[in-house]
Length: 363
Ligand code: F6R
Image (cartoon, rainbow, N blue to C red; front, side, top):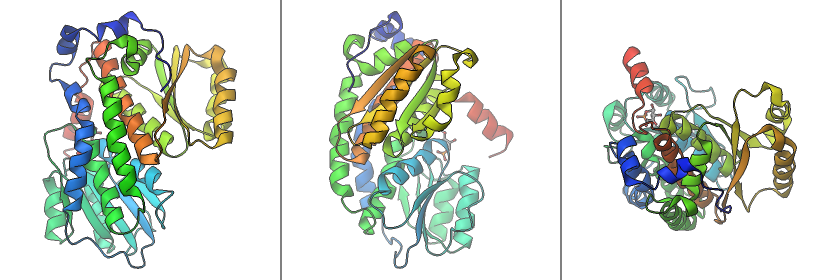
């Protein structure tokens, strides 16, 4: 972890229980704090799933899901890439690509079980004879999957989907492990449980802003446009998760990009600072497993664009496995984005416009 940056008045407000209670009336923060416990429980649920598909002749793995459920696909893609013998893709649309077929293992992931894009893609995958496992709390997905004889990992309901990452993201990994597609993931899950719990303790509401990275970074981001950077792979997936959490929990627009690709486009816009619409706060997700050339690129890039931005702060993980690194970033970012909502006086829980969209579309 980086040294804790300067504490702002906005961050200090987060030490006041009355501020937390007022801005977060449903105590969304407690769901964020509960993520480490969810991870272990999700392992047990996925271990209990029966009648898993045969993987003889498997050619690909696809994870179907949107929003807070779709992030499970990004997590699987990043974590399984160095382990799985076949490519892994996240599909976030109604229509599935032509390569999905009988030789594809498909995880259909929807916390509610009623997200129309995921249901449409699931039905297309079923029609093509894909080998399907559903991960859901219920809804149409649970019903249709069970009726067709597909295994369903049934996870507990009652959370906002984005606060249920453990429940939606761990089961596909455990199922892949049980099918021999994720060698070594057991050890990584054990490490991830420890690392996530340690990070959650360090970011907890009871830890004062002066020594709480999530609170201090949230304080610094008030009034800034956040950009989140990571390197390709686990930190990139975590950067995307944090961007989405900043949108949904803090109710702000945010951007994300990955190294080395951002060196070939985003950096040009940043260098020409006269085009930047608001003071920028850049968060860089760093880990010890970065490609050394990528690490060098991060250092050179941040020094080249330093004058264009309000601040650049790094969040480091020292975890050994890609899964533990990713979840370390997720726990830090989930706290940070929730604290940013609270520091801005914006209730982190409701996602009014997503509900309006679903209602308007009758989905
Ligand atoms: C809400 C959230 C959303 C949902 C998305 C899909 O907390 O994060 O992004 O995850 O609208 O819904 P589900 O997850 O029920 O398939």
